[in-house]
Length: 295
Image (cartoon, rainbow, N blue to C red; front, side):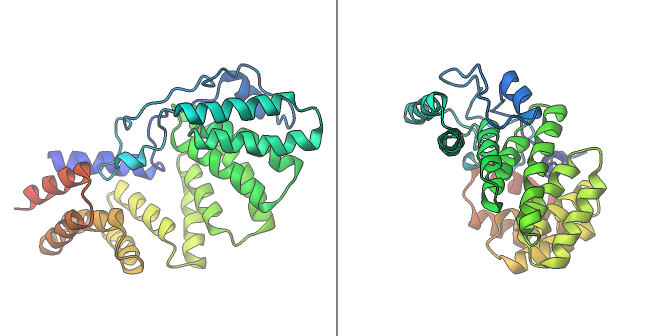
């Protein structure tokens, strides 16, 4: 297997599991036990000043070649963010009135989210959502759990966070069945589970409702690549690039699909276009690898 082939296998596998990078965030065990029991008001113990989360700026091993430094969302919290987090946590812990506590839970969740501690942010947004149910409040909780899911340390942890994300998004869909972003995220949690076909079916439902849905098109294209169905991947990425000509990753993977199906001239043209679209060194390296292999 050539180096270029190895790169695409790694990239496809990583992206197909919803950007399944190694985590920079882990909820401490007491937080985990609390939300698994469905607690809505109890304050998880064991929060230290840095909340026991591990952070770093390096992307995980196996991250796709298109990932840039901006994609590494989990970064070390700044002193200002830690101070904001400590202040919000102290206010929450001191509150005794139930209504005030649920409001402060939202503020604390926002502070965790700002510090890229998405699992704890999801936990506190869930508390706020259960106190004042609504589409937007559950969407906030679901989005944070989903973010944490994409950075899960293990498959077991990903499964736990995927379940939590689905629970929140299902509440969103009860209020708004047309929320295709929530449905797409639910689909991707299933794809990383023992029931991937359910996720694929949901993605197809999204495409049926919105043929131009960029997120669903991209994910279906990546899944086709993972199963070596490059003709189908080409179809998905062509559609994606037609919808959004500035979609860098879509253009890159369309070029890869074309290269894999023997359409070298068009692939070369698109690879060169990608180099003009992005100055990311990791992406440029991957493009150069493919171009060298197509000579």
